[in-house]
Length: 263
Image (cartoon, rainbow, N blue to C red; front, side, top):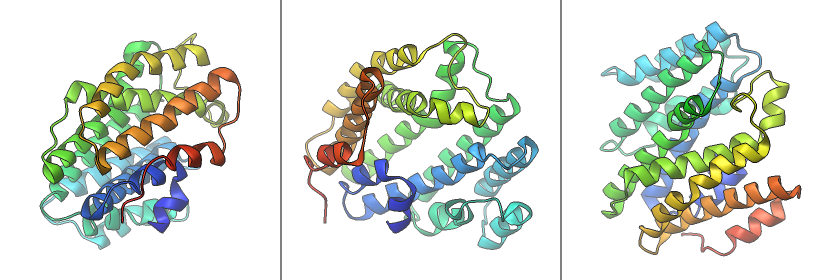
């Protein structure tokens, strides 16, 4: 939880609304995804190194035996460049998740790593909305589908997969819009050609009704609070972008205070 808090203040708050084993599982799954994301985004790794690392992780996740030593050997040539959250990938992906659900997470993580490698090969070129659809599905909607599987396993809550896809797209598009200047500074542009911030925010908002339906389909309780707070934060992100107002810690904390933290 300390690593989660230092890695992502935004997702730490919703995850803390979950309880017990599910909170630990979602936290580990988030950190494993973040580990891959930091490989994809790393400014000091060459495209070739990123592809080798991402594809290497995918291969390890698909093997019958997967040891810390294998991860260390894969990461060793680039260890000085890798963030601590990435170097601890084995912990997040293998040690922490319950054994009966871990293979479902490995499938999701291996697929994500392969898709990220494909986007590195393509130099993250997004010409139109179809490309943006593919990217947001690869890095966010697919995670929403996996979380839906976790809700079902943990609490027998069945959610619609199309709505899970929309939830992921809305959240990811808001993230892309918020981080646009930072991405441009490192030479990456996730905006389709000719799009403005208003266009990206509009794309996110078009997916909000289905994302809201996803939340409303979940019974009251910690899982709904997790999803609802996540969506609240990204609604606030869109509003801040379009109104030109800051989104500070006080605003996010006030949103989170509306939901109880699970023991």
